[in-house]
Length: 241
Image 1 (cartoon, rainbow, N blue to C red):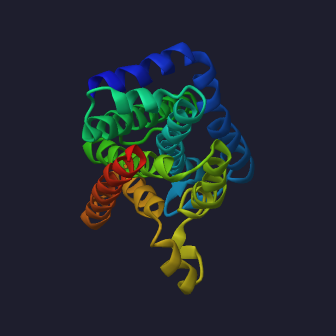
Image 2 (cartoon, rainbow, N blue to C red):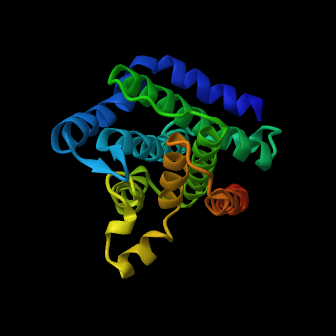
């Protein structure tokens, strides 16, 4: 497990400045366009729109960066043939899945620290307590586990891009990141509550505002993460066969 995890960290260190730029461009654009531009003077639930936006960006970016581990896995599978070497090595499937999931969570936490640094420079003061980091960690666990599993199912690198375009990108905009879900029509709210990012945004935002935690969101994220982790293990077994 540690060998798999260390390999991904070495790749991250090798591309550190490129990764730093990639992780910061989108949050900065959203921050300036929605926070300082459209959201200036707007208040949501007693908070400025900028204060509302930062937790949403944390939820969205931690999802995207955790899921991005799938691209690294597919590059290793289809171009470097590293997965074939893993198959020949005495590495158990559970070690492989755990190492890759931890790598995805690490990428997500790194992007979260980056966004919070931008928030501090922007003068936004929120509460980054235990429940905040727990929600971020569970959100990262969900999408890192999902990424590892789906990376075993796709047949090419372009298939992975399709999954991102059809699932991750719509969820990024509809999961309570930029607007309160309860302002949508009732039938839309019911649909959006099936999205894990909706619950992650809700939990992260409540913790950042210092509100009492809704443990149902935490339990749902933990359950989904466990299900996706088991599925990832199963799909790695199939890929090895």
